[in-house]
Image 1 (cartoon, rainbow, N blue to C red):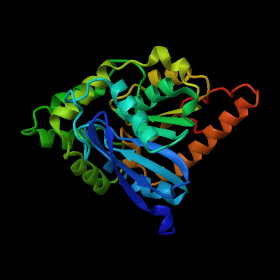
Image 2 (image 1 turned 90 degrees about the vertical axis):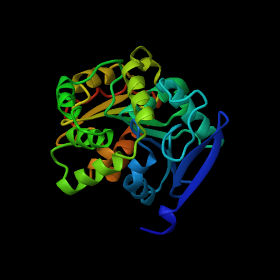
Image 3 (image 1 turned 120 degrees about the horizontal axis):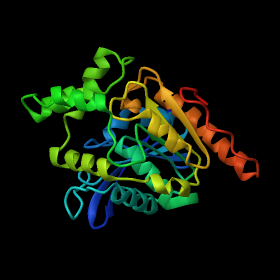
Image 4 (image 1 turned 90 degrees about the horizontal axis):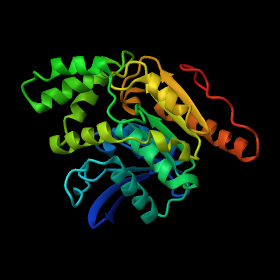
Amino acid sequence: MSAASTTLRAHQLTVDGRTAFVQDWGPEHGRPLLAIHTAGQSGVQYRDAARELAALGYRVLVPDLPGHGHSEPARGGPVTDLADYARFCLKALTLLRIDRPVVVGCSIGGKIALEIGALAGDGIAAIIAMAANAEAGHVNIRAMRRELTDISAPSRSDRTYWGTLAVMGSAVSTRRRELIGRMHCREDPQVSGSDLLAWGTHDVAERLPRITAPTHLVVGDDDLWVDAERVGRAAGRIGRSRFTRLPGIGHYPMEEMDDFADVIDGWVEDLLALGAHTAAGASAPATPPEGENP
Protein backbone atom coordinates (compact mmCIF):
# COMPACT_ATOMS: atom_id res chain seq x y z
CA MET A 1 0.00 0.00 0.00
CA SER A 2 1.79 3.15 -1.17
CA ALA A 3 1.58 6.46 0.67
CA ALA A 4 0.35 8.18 -2.51
CA SER A 5 -2.54 5.76 -2.93
CA THR A 6 -4.01 6.66 0.48
CA THR A 7 -3.48 10.43 0.38
CA LEU A 8 -6.29 12.30 2.15
CA ARG A 9 -7.26 15.76 1.01
CA ALA A 10 -10.11 17.83 2.45
CA HIS A 11 -12.32 20.39 0.76
CA GLN A 12 -14.43 23.17 2.22
CA LEU A 13 -16.93 24.01 -0.48
CA THR A 14 -19.67 26.61 -0.55
CA VAL A 15 -22.93 24.91 -1.44
CA ASP A 16 -26.13 26.98 -1.34
CA GLY A 17 -24.30 29.63 0.67
CA ARG A 18 -23.14 27.26 3.40
CA THR A 19 -19.80 25.56 4.08
CA ALA A 20 -19.72 21.90 3.10
CA PHE A 21 -16.92 19.53 4.07
CA VAL A 22 -15.79 16.71 1.78
CA GLN A 23 -13.04 14.16 2.40
CA ASP A 24 -11.11 13.29 -0.76
CA TRP A 25 -9.11 10.06 -0.56
CA GLY A 26 -6.72 8.45 -3.00
CA PRO A 27 -5.23 9.32 -6.41
CA GLU A 28 -6.69 12.41 -8.11
CA HIS A 29 -7.13 10.49 -11.35
CA GLY A 30 -8.51 7.33 -9.75
CA ARG A 31 -12.00 6.02 -10.45
CA PRO A 32 -14.30 8.47 -8.60
CA LEU A 33 -16.55 7.00 -5.91
CA LEU A 34 -19.00 9.05 -3.84
CA ALA A 35 -19.72 7.53 -0.40
CA ILE A 36 -22.79 8.76 1.52
CA HIS A 37 -23.25 8.23 5.25
CA THR A 38 -26.31 7.24 7.31
CA ALA A 39 -28.86 9.27 9.31
CA GLY A 40 -27.34 11.60 11.89
CA GLN A 41 -23.80 10.42 11.22
CA SER A 42 -20.94 11.78 9.08
CA GLY A 43 -18.22 10.74 6.67
CA VAL A 44 -16.31 9.23 9.59
CA GLN A 45 -18.36 6.07 8.99
CA TYR A 46 -16.11 5.43 5.96
CA ARG A 47 -12.86 5.99 7.91
CA ASP A 48 -11.56 2.49 7.13
CA ALA A 49 -13.38 1.81 3.88
CA ALA A 50 -12.25 5.05 2.19
CA ARG A 51 -8.59 4.43 2.97
CA GLU A 52 -8.78 0.83 1.76
CA LEU A 53 -10.69 1.76 -1.42
CA ALA A 54 -8.09 4.46 -2.11
CA ALA A 55 -5.39 1.81 -1.87
CA LEU A 56 -7.27 -0.09 -4.59
CA GLY A 57 -7.05 2.92 -6.90
CA TYR A 58 -10.33 4.73 -6.21
CA ARG A 59 -10.70 8.45 -5.62
CA VAL A 60 -13.18 8.37 -2.75
CA LEU A 61 -15.27 11.49 -2.06
CA VAL A 62 -16.95 11.41 1.35
CA PRO A 63 -19.17 14.42 2.10
CA ASP A 64 -20.63 15.38 5.44
CA LEU A 65 -24.25 16.11 4.58
CA PRO A 66 -25.58 19.55 5.67
CA GLY A 67 -25.73 19.78 9.46
CA HIS A 68 -23.54 16.68 9.90
CA GLY A 69 -19.89 16.41 10.88
CA HIS A 70 -17.93 19.46 9.67
CA SER A 71 -20.64 20.76 7.31
CA GLU A 72 -22.74 23.76 8.29
CA PRO A 73 -26.52 23.35 8.64
CA ALA A 74 -28.72 23.96 5.62
CA ARG A 75 -30.18 27.47 5.40
CA GLY A 76 -33.67 26.25 6.26
CA GLY A 77 -32.56 24.18 9.25
CA PRO A 78 -32.47 20.37 9.50
CA VAL A 79 -33.28 18.70 6.17
CA THR A 80 -36.43 16.58 5.94
CA ASP A 81 -36.34 15.75 2.22
CA LEU A 82 -33.72 13.31 0.94
CA ALA A 83 -33.97 14.86 -2.53
CA ASP A 84 -32.38 18.00 -1.00
CA TYR A 85 -29.41 15.88 0.09
CA ALA A 86 -29.19 14.34 -3.40
CA ARG A 87 -29.03 17.78 -4.99
CA PHE A 88 -26.40 18.83 -2.42
CA CYS A 89 -24.23 15.85 -3.43
CA LEU A 90 -24.60 16.64 -7.13
CA LYS A 91 -23.62 20.28 -6.54
CA ALA A 92 -20.55 19.17 -4.55
CA LEU A 93 -19.51 16.83 -7.38
CA THR A 94 -19.89 19.67 -9.89
CA LEU A 95 -17.72 21.99 -7.78
CA LEU A 96 -15.06 19.27 -7.55
CA ARG A 97 -15.33 18.60 -11.32
CA ILE A 98 -16.10 14.93 -10.78
CA ASP A 99 -17.56 13.14 -13.80
CA ARG A 100 -19.59 9.91 -13.77
CA PRO A 101 -18.80 8.67 -10.26
CA VAL A 102 -19.79 5.38 -8.72
CA VAL A 103 -22.27 6.29 -5.95
CA VAL A 104 -22.33 4.22 -2.75
CA GLY A 105 -24.71 4.95 0.12
CA CYS A 106 -26.08 3.28 3.23
CA SER A 107 -29.51 3.70 4.89
CA ILE A 108 -30.59 7.27 4.06
CA GLY A 109 -27.38 7.34 2.02
CA GLY A 110 -28.68 4.38 0.01
CA LYS A 111 -31.95 6.17 -0.66
CA ILE A 112 -30.00 9.30 -1.61
CA ALA A 113 -27.93 7.20 -4.02
CA LEU A 114 -31.12 6.00 -5.74
CA GLU A 115 -32.41 9.58 -5.86
CA ILE A 116 -29.13 10.73 -7.43
CA GLY A 117 -29.48 7.97 -10.02
CA ALA A 118 -33.00 9.11 -10.88
CA LEU A 119 -31.90 12.74 -11.14
CA ALA A 120 -28.56 12.36 -12.94
CA GLY A 121 -29.22 9.49 -15.36
CA ASP A 122 -26.13 8.72 -17.45
CA GLY A 123 -24.09 11.13 -15.32
CA ILE A 124 -23.61 8.26 -12.86
CA ALA A 125 -21.40 5.26 -13.69
CA ALA A 126 -22.90 2.82 -11.15
CA ILE A 127 -24.90 2.77 -7.90
CA ILE A 128 -24.56 0.60 -4.80
CA ALA A 129 -27.46 1.26 -2.42
CA MET A 130 -27.12 -0.54 0.93
CA ALA A 131 -29.71 -0.95 3.67
CA ALA A 132 -32.27 1.13 1.80
CA ASN A 133 -35.76 0.62 0.48
CA ALA A 134 -37.26 2.70 -2.32
CA GLU A 135 -40.67 3.36 -0.77
CA ALA A 136 -41.78 5.67 2.03
CA GLY A 137 -42.71 4.76 5.53
CA HIS A 138 -41.90 1.05 5.62
CA VAL A 139 -39.98 -0.25 8.63
CA ASN A 140 -39.27 -3.69 9.95
CA ILE A 141 -41.64 -4.79 12.73
CA ARG A 142 -38.76 -6.41 14.66
CA ALA A 143 -37.09 -2.99 14.75
CA MET A 144 -40.20 -1.31 16.16
CA ARG A 145 -40.47 -3.91 18.91
CA ARG A 146 -36.79 -3.45 19.76
CA GLU A 147 -37.33 0.32 19.81
CA LEU A 148 -39.91 -0.13 22.57
CA THR A 149 -37.11 -1.55 24.70
CA ASP A 150 -34.48 0.98 23.72
CA ILE A 151 -36.77 3.98 24.26
CA SER A 152 -36.65 3.47 28.03
CA ALA A 153 -32.91 4.28 28.08
CA PRO A 154 -32.10 7.22 30.40
CA SER A 155 -30.48 9.45 27.75
CA ARG A 156 -30.43 10.07 24.02
CA SER A 157 -26.78 9.03 23.93
CA ASP A 158 -27.58 5.68 25.54
CA ARG A 159 -30.51 5.20 23.22
CA THR A 160 -28.30 5.83 20.19
CA TYR A 161 -25.66 3.44 21.53
CA TRP A 162 -28.02 0.56 22.29
CA GLY A 163 -30.08 1.18 19.15
CA THR A 164 -26.93 0.99 17.01
CA LEU A 165 -25.90 -2.29 18.62
CA ALA A 166 -29.40 -3.66 18.03
CA VAL A 167 -29.23 -3.30 14.25
CA MET A 168 -25.73 -4.72 13.72
CA GLY A 169 -25.15 -8.22 12.44
CA SER A 170 -24.33 -11.39 14.32
CA ALA A 171 -21.03 -11.72 12.43
CA VAL A 172 -19.64 -8.52 14.02
CA SER A 173 -17.24 -8.97 16.94
CA THR A 174 -18.09 -7.52 20.36
CA ARG A 175 -15.10 -5.17 20.19
CA ARG A 176 -16.11 -3.81 16.78
CA ARG A 177 -19.75 -3.44 17.85
CA GLU A 178 -18.65 -1.39 20.86
CA LEU A 179 -16.51 0.92 18.72
CA ILE A 180 -19.24 1.50 16.14
CA GLY A 181 -21.83 2.15 18.86
CA ARG A 182 -19.65 4.73 20.59
CA MET A 183 -18.77 6.49 17.33
CA HIS A 184 -22.47 6.81 16.50
CA CYS A 185 -23.16 8.67 19.76
CA ARG A 186 -21.66 11.80 18.18
CA GLU A 187 -24.91 12.56 16.32
CA ASP A 188 -27.02 15.72 16.69
CA PRO A 189 -30.51 14.63 17.85
CA GLN A 190 -32.32 17.32 15.83
CA VAL A 191 -30.46 16.41 12.66
CA SER A 192 -30.77 12.65 13.08
CA GLY A 193 -34.47 12.94 13.92
CA SER A 194 -35.05 15.03 10.79
CA ASP A 195 -33.07 12.48 8.75
CA LEU A 196 -35.36 9.72 9.96
CA LEU A 197 -38.43 11.77 9.04
CA ALA A 198 -36.91 12.17 5.59
CA TRP A 199 -36.29 8.41 5.42
CA GLY A 200 -39.89 7.69 6.34
CA THR A 201 -41.41 10.07 3.80
CA HIS A 202 -39.06 9.73 0.82
CA ASP A 203 -40.43 7.61 -2.01
CA VAL A 204 -38.39 7.04 -5.17
CA ALA A 205 -40.18 3.82 -6.15
CA GLU A 206 -42.10 5.22 -9.10
CA ARG A 207 -38.94 6.79 -10.50
CA LEU A 208 -36.74 3.70 -10.29
CA PRO A 209 -37.14 3.06 -14.05
CA ARG A 210 -35.44 6.42 -14.64
CA ILE A 211 -32.20 5.03 -13.20
CA THR A 212 -29.99 4.19 -16.15
CA ALA A 213 -26.80 3.38 -14.22
CA PRO A 214 -26.24 -0.29 -13.38
CA THR A 215 -27.37 -0.63 -9.77
CA HIS A 216 -26.71 -3.05 -6.92
CA LEU A 217 -29.12 -3.15 -3.97
CA VAL A 218 -27.70 -4.73 -0.83
CA VAL A 219 -29.35 -5.78 2.45
CA GLY A 220 -27.83 -7.42 5.52
CA ASP A 221 -29.77 -10.47 6.68
CA ASP A 222 -29.57 -9.15 10.27
CA ASP A 223 -30.78 -5.64 9.39
CA LEU A 224 -33.80 -4.95 11.61
CA TRP A 225 -34.84 -1.81 9.78
CA VAL A 226 -35.13 -2.87 6.16
CA ASP A 227 -37.54 -5.34 4.56
CA ALA A 228 -35.34 -7.40 2.22
CA GLU A 229 -38.32 -8.59 0.18
CA ARG A 230 -39.26 -5.02 -0.71
CA VAL A 231 -35.68 -4.18 -1.64
CA GLY A 232 -35.53 -7.23 -3.90
CA ARG A 233 -38.69 -6.10 -5.67
CA ALA A 234 -37.23 -2.61 -6.07
CA ALA A 235 -34.16 -4.10 -7.77
CA GLY A 236 -36.48 -5.72 -10.28
CA ARG A 237 -37.80 -2.29 -11.33
CA ILE A 238 -34.37 -1.00 -12.34
CA GLY A 239 -33.24 -1.85 -15.86
CA ARG A 240 -29.76 -3.10 -14.99
CA SER A 241 -29.64 -4.35 -11.44
CA ARG A 242 -28.24 -6.77 -8.91
CA PHE A 243 -29.59 -7.72 -5.46
CA THR A 244 -27.57 -9.27 -2.64
CA ARG A 245 -28.33 -10.35 0.92
CA LEU A 246 -25.35 -10.40 3.30
CA PRO A 247 -25.39 -13.16 5.94
CA GLY A 248 -24.48 -12.05 9.46
CA ILE A 249 -24.44 -8.34 8.53
CA GLY A 250 -26.84 -5.67 9.80
CA HIS A 251 -27.55 -2.06 8.93
CA TYR A 252 -23.98 -0.72 8.54
CA PRO A 253 -22.04 -2.90 6.06
CA MET A 254 -19.19 -0.38 5.56
CA GLU A 255 -18.47 -0.44 9.30
CA GLU A 256 -19.34 -4.05 10.05
CA MET A 257 -17.49 -5.86 7.24
CA ASP A 258 -13.74 -6.44 7.54
CA ASP A 259 -13.45 -6.98 3.78
CA PHE A 260 -15.83 -4.21 2.72
CA ALA A 261 -13.43 -2.48 0.29
CA ASP A 262 -12.62 -5.70 -1.55
CA VAL A 263 -16.30 -6.63 -1.76
CA ILE A 264 -17.25 -3.18 -3.07
CA ASP A 265 -14.45 -3.36 -5.63
CA GLY A 266 -15.85 -6.64 -6.91
CA TRP A 267 -19.37 -5.23 -7.09
CA VAL A 268 -18.16 -2.14 -8.97
CA GLU A 269 -16.31 -4.24 -11.54
CA ASP A 270 -19.41 -6.40 -11.99
CA LEU A 271 -21.66 -3.35 -12.44
CA LEU A 272 -19.34 -1.66 -14.92
CA ALA A 273 -19.11 -4.89 -16.90
CA LEU A 274 -22.91 -5.15 -16.84
CA GLY A 275 -23.16 -1.58 -18.10
CA ALA A 276 -20.68 -2.19 -20.90
CA HIS A 277 -22.42 -5.45 -21.85
CA THR A 278 -25.85 -3.86 -22.20
CA ALA A 279 -24.46 -0.73 -23.86
CA ALA A 280 -23.05 -3.00 -26.58
CA GLY A 281 -26.59 -4.05 -27.41
CA ALA A 282 -26.93 -7.30 -25.45
CA SER A 283 -29.88 -7.79 -23.12
CA ALA A 284 -29.26 -7.34 -19.40
CA PRO A 285 -28.77 -10.55 -17.42
CA ALA A 286 -31.55 -11.38 -15.02
CA THR A 287 -31.20 -10.21 -11.44
CA PRO A 288 -29.71 -13.11 -9.41
CA PRO A 289 -31.89 -14.84 -6.82
CA GLU A 290 -31.91 -13.38 -3.30
CA GLY A 291 -28.85 -14.38 -1.34
CA GLU A 292 -26.75 -15.02 -4.42
CA ASN A 293 -23.68 -12.81 -4.74
CA PRO A 294 -23.26 -12.07 -8.44
